[in-house]
Length: 113
Image (cartoon, rainbow, N blue to C red; front, side, top):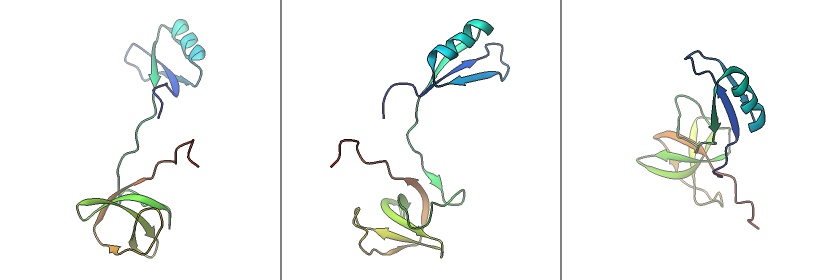
């Protein structure tokens, strides 16, 4: 993740909900000058844990799961069960019964071979 903003917001300083968002800083700065608004850089955020009662991952996609009080790699199957994965090799693992949260795995490094 980079420390560079991914977009810029021009936000009304009067407390109203007026906002303008642009990937280009110059466009957001123009809106700030025109309306007297404040410029706010927007940054990408780190993935967060998603409760399973809020949303489930796509079927058979490996994710990071929190189950039985620990983190592990797991896959969700629409038939209603979680399968624990050992590393990234997807070797057979035990069925997890108490998965409470999950999050997507990050993308591999850009320079990985």
